Length: 221
Length: 229
Image (cartoon, rainbow over the protein chains, first blue to last red):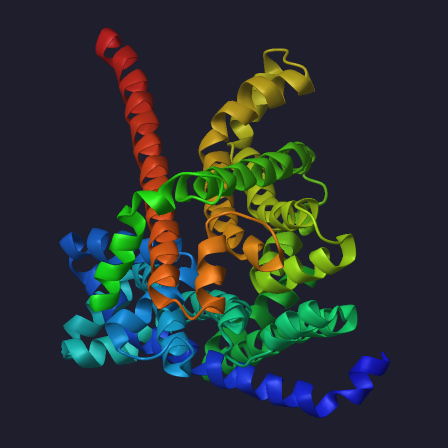
């Protein structure tokens, strides 16, 4: 406990560095996965290479990827850009499948109705398919967010600053409280981001609220 | 790209391949860690998963464990257990086992859970005991999910086993951290390429074995129809 109170500023810095490394890949993998998942769902022949092919990235261990990637990016191993790009790859590996599955779950009637009403393909996607796929997209994004927040810490062994630095520093100096703080901080931050995503879903998809309220009252009756 | 040729030359150098500190010995260590940790976790997690799946009680534990596993930082678990249990290979193996258990638990549980309730009822109706229902109906039908869980556990452990060298163990990570300490990028790169290759080969082997077993299953289920038709 002493260690904790004496090191609050350092923990705060690590926390902020952690967020700066993990939020960009979460957002980037979501934005990149949308068109990829859409293409995989729209064109059958693209599904296997996009969904199964990209999910193979997830089989690549994170530390080796962080070391190999600079060869392609031209960055140093310790560069935050390197970490952000690696985490974005992992996010895409998980998210493209979620996007394709979520779009699969959109009722065909809704899509054909939109076509019948003369919606352009672009408008149909943004006004009909995307909102209806919302719950599935949110579920996928939550998985990406939580696993990204945990993955960031691996970069600490290379000297990149995040909450993972509490593991390396705590291990080298034999301070158990520091390692525990790192674990609790990482999990808590992941849960916080997860809750924030749920809240964003709650605000942006008001029709789900009506449905869940109905089912709740229906259940109690 | 110069680094890449240097890294490949490092791997190809016979001096780096054999001996107690050679690639082959470290590869064997890496595989042994994976085997022991996944095996130990499976011995514990599979019975629990089956018990929860069969009785339907405690499914919250599975959901909680898989959720927590996703949020848990592997490096944190590894360093914490290493600090608590001291130097030696026991601590990292326990940490790897802890990381492997949730996906095996989920695989065993969801396999049993996914069996059609009517199939289970039919098994009971023809007079099977609860053990027989589990052993002869639920476990065989749930094998694909269990294999899926084992597969992700093996891949996760194999990836994390690279970090074992950070807390004083062996495995392929040894070269990686040696290279990191001595600022020898080609050696780090060589070690990374070896780990990636190992992961890709294992993923491929799993994929092939799943496809083969699926093809066999399909052939088996098709043949009675052919006879009947």
